[in-house]
Length: 525
Image 1: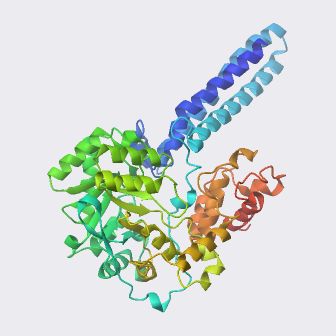
Image 2 (image 1 turned 60 degrees about the vertical axis):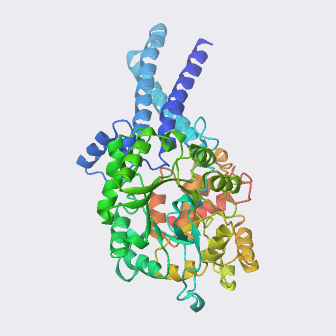
C-alpha cells in the first residue's frame, strides 16, 4: 500500500510539473513569440547560432520542453535508483543482480517520467486547459494556412479587374479598398512572379492597403514592399506588426524593444512612418494591454512614426481578446479571422467594435480551408471559390476590408474581380458545394475530438493539415518538410486496428486519410 501511494504521488508530481510548468511553453509554441519572450531566450538564441543551428522562435519553447522532460527523467531515474537500494538491502540479493535490477528500474522510471511530463505539457498546450476556453486543436489548422490557393483557370472575364468599392476604415477615416494585399508570402518570390511586381500591379488596380510584418519571409516581405511602393507611399495605407524577424514580442518586453521593432520595419520599408501597427496573433489580454507596448506606441506616434494602433487574433482566446480590445478603447483597427463558419460570436463582436468604438475591421483567414483546387466540381462554377468566400465576408457591411495573400499575378485579377460585388446565388452555391465536398475530409474548426482515441498519441490534426498543404494548396515541398519534422508520423497507422474509427464528429475516415497522407508526404524508398 505504501509503495502504491508513493508511486501515485510520484506520477502526480511529474504530471503537475509537465502541466503547470512545461504546458505553458507548449501552449506558446503556436503563438510565434520572439526568442526574447522566453526566459533567457536571447541567450538560448545566441547559443544556437554558435552551434550553427538554424531555427525560429519556437526553438526556445522546444528547448525548455525538452530540457524539462530530460530533467524529470534524470531526477526520477536517480530517485528510483536510490530508493530501490534500500529495498535491495532488506532483501539482501546478490550485488550484481541488484545493480542490474536497479538500473532497469531507473531507466524505466526515467522514460516514464519523460513521457508523463511531455504528455501533460501537450494536453495543456493542445486543449488550453488553464490558459484558454479552448486550445490550439480547437482553432482550425486550416485558418493557419501559410498559402492561399488559386483557381485552376485564369478566366478572361477576370482580366483587368479593379477595385470597385472602398469602405471607411473606422475612425482612421481612410477610404480603404474592400480587398487588400496580404504580403505574407511575397518575400519568397522571384523572377516573373516577383513579389514587388505583384504588389505594384495590385496598387495600379486600386488596392490601397498592404498588410506586412517583419516575420513574413524573415523581412523579405518588407523589402519587396519597399520596392513596390517607391514613389507612391502617400497613397498606400501600410500596416505592420510589433514583431522581430523571429516572432512576436511577448508581454513585458521593454519599451525600447517594441520601438526598435517598428523602427527596424521603417528602415526595411524605406519609409518615415507606418499607418498602422498591430499587436499580432494576440492570444492573451496580458499581451494586448501590456503597458510597455502602449507606451511604445504613444511615443512612436508622438514622434510621427506610426499613426494608428490595432491588434490581430486568430487564436483560442479570440473572443476574450476581441472583447477586451473593444472595451479598452485603445485600438483603432482589429484584424480577426472571419469566414463562413467561423466563430459564431464574431458578427456581434464586430457590430460592437464599430458601434461602440468606431473601429475599423479587417477580415483575415477568409478562405476556410481553401481546398477548392482539389475539388473538380468547382470548375463548373462561374465564380472561383476565392471570390465567393470574399464576397461572403464583404456581405457584412461592417467589415472594412478583406485581406488575402497575393502571391501570383493571377491573384490580382481573380481576387479583385470580387471587389464591390454582391453575394449572389451562385456564390452561395459555391460555398454550399464546398461544404458538401469537404464533408469527410475537412478537419473542421473547434474540434480535436479524435486525439484521445489514438493509442500512439499521433498528431492527427497536423498530419491532415500537411496533407491539405500538399493536395489542396499545391505546396508539396512545404507539406513534406513539415511532415518530416513530426516526431511520430502516420506510418504507425498501417498496422493499427483503428480505435479512432467513429471518433470524428464530421465523419472523416481517420485511418484511411492518415495512411494516404503518409504515402503522399513520404519519399519512396
